[in-house]
Length: 250
Image (cartoon, rainbow, N blue to C red; front, top):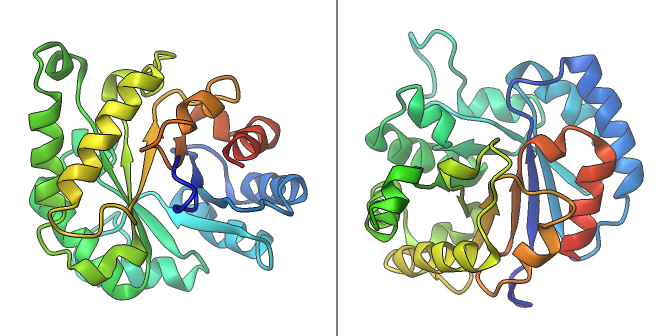
């Protein structure tokens, strides 16, 4: 982790927590990380819990991000959510391109448009990328990440760096208990930074690692020079373990 880049620890709750459950969680978390120090912290609730989370965290240093955003501002898109809708809940960012969303059909072209739309709206974007186990075993990780990053940043400009974070999440390590070794995480995050540098200031870009991050492995993963924080899944569902990961990022 570079001292020049402020680390970010974000918790992706996926399809967990109702509004009341989210509020209870956020009150507990805010008490645990009332002073996060030189670390940015965010939670990513489901859409129905965005407003409750943002309300509970008002005045705290913890941000609230949605788990996805549509590329259009309005229209016949049943089940989707726009940047304006996210902002109206009090949330201030969004994940885009998570592998679980890509598996549900989100395309590279949509992801590129969503990145542009969200940045234009003033949202912080956490752009996700990552390869499958078969891609890694075939020795195609670098080519895969290069394609994903170049495509996703198609409409991005150099000045967008303040609203952009990229999270490397190896699909084979999401929810499996398998974690990339610190060396694997460093290698992949360095690739992400190098490719993104074609478009934006790579040295200023924050690159996160995600994939079975826990309180036990977070410090070692985030000690790598190109790993600037973590996108946390299962370990973000309880305030204590998530706060421990935030502490490790300090």
